[in-house]
Length: 551
Image 1: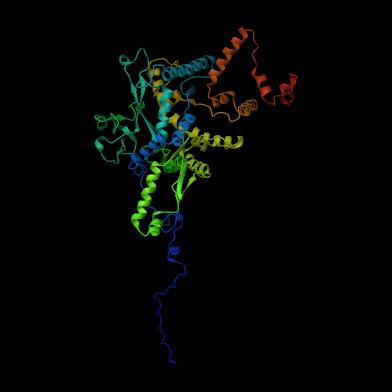
Image 2 (image 1 turned 120 degrees about the vertical axis):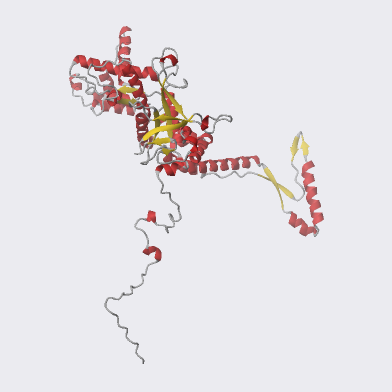
């Protein structure tokens, strides 16, 4: 047997690595499956890697147009927007001032200073109410809305369009309506009016009508004089004006309300953009079911026959005779009919039978399918499924309360956004005007308004209450919280959507009216004793056991 010649391998030569037993995909699979280009679920998707402005500004017009179309025509989309707006802003926001006493030069240890500080709180509250609740709507540039109505419109724009835009204007005294002592007013505009002048493309210093400094700060806004797609014959949409973001001394000039979801984002993204596909699917499915139901209801009966065209042609062996029979049958149905006592009797053609449509369309899965889609729409839109469907029958007390609590967390976040970026800047402008007009009682050493604007405008915005799932248990829980000192009466009043100072004043006046009429007013301690047990040791001294009363 011939031996194979030996092959000498020199030192340092490259060794042949054994072939891998795995496939090519397994060899080059990335550490994170989300970045795997060969993954069956994620592969082949062209993902965007653009900035916040690049991803949104190029798609904004088409996306917002689709959302507006759904809100106009789809009842569930309209219901979600309406309910979310009502839950977020409702009707009647109240501003409770809490100015910084130390920063403004007050010494609350001194009784006289404390009285002047209380007078300042009352003055701030009075100035805001006179401006925001003006019955002639002079706080609005167009004199059509008061503050609450402007707030509702702004929040509706933010939900649908992703942003709300308002121009803070100032009317000189000779241009004011009547003797209104405030020149500050707000002009809400459509967000579509934010546009680059002369259709210029976006750049490092211009993003969708927002002018930027070289370092990225917002410098101002380019606003068209009319809507770009306004009525025919209007050319205002082609002309733009520039408004600085704020005056040189700090007064806001433009209010731009939107939720900034990414760094470098300069225009607001609609909350409903993630739900648009589900909304359109739900709309198409509902329309298809409705058409099927209507067609099924309109078809009462039908004629059936075993003598079709092909069968007749084969039977007669002649197409002409078969066609003649078919023509005769059609003519029969056009002229046939027997009337008995004024009622028509259906008589089928010989060889045919009448079949009544007694089968209803099965749509058992329709409600479940709609409910499932509505849940996805609500999740994307930041609401609850009840806000979309308006159906509150599928939950008991515990699940309904849990659903309300989850929705309320989102509402509190949205309220904070609206308060910080819409309501507070407006209050700042109103208080600035009152400060320089000398209508605020301040100490001699009080700082200038724009030296400490946060000290003057500090406060809380009280919106509409959450509402009670159980109108008995929850007020009792509030009374127990107050008795156990886990919450203050002031906090409970604000949770109910009331200004605590107004509640105290109303109760004081009401008690005086009761005393003048000879009625005995009920004390707060008696109310707490009736509402539930307390740990107050003084209840034993009075000879009454609240726990026994509870039993």
